[in-house]
Length: 105
Length: 154
Image 1 (cartoon, each protein chain N blue to C red):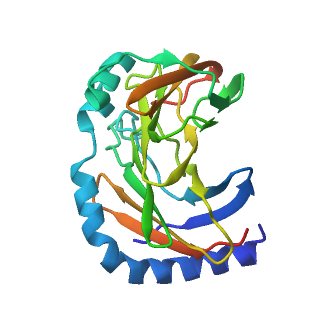
Image 2: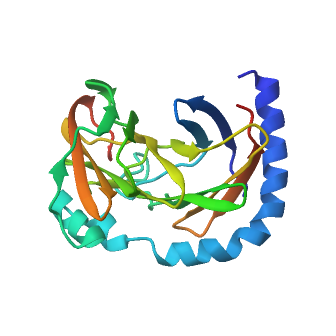
Image 3: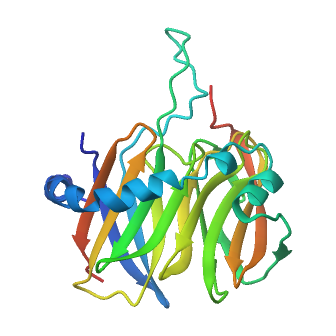
């Protein structure tokens, strides 16, 4: 299942700030379902990578303490309008996704 | 963002994702094997640091700039941002001292800027520590964030 992703970038001083939002439950595996009293199994993104013009620039390992529908910000060096940025992710249940965008700064 | 723009962006996004997915499969498999499970399940900050870097020795630095609220009404999503002006930054990581598993996230830079913004879950009022590895050394800065309602479990 493809999860919704959004991306936006803006120049802030010497780096460009890339904001990524992913729709993901990020279950900790510690929460109980109030109706059934059963523990909801953990389901979270383990890794995210940012590729800038084909080069991997950031790799982010994440745990269960990242909030639901995470909004992540990464720094890009020397980014300019027209650059291609791809963000890919993979979660603990083997789900994955990726999103590409041409930067507009 | 307007609803229409949002929808359009999402639809194009998933189409590209399907195409890009095939080519990106290999690097992601390699990365998955490197996910530091031991560090993420560590019960203390020192243990997580030792597991990630082999040492928990770190020095505080003024070159790590934290942008986080003094107080968060709800611990379920606290936006924190960290920026560093240190040179040769290799990795950056975030720890919430009073969470059952303190390590939140770690980024490895291979040409990216020394910046990380993330929404974190916090169980209760705690010190949040930001560790930056630069030139093979660990630098740290921390900030205490007050939480009125916890955001883990329930």
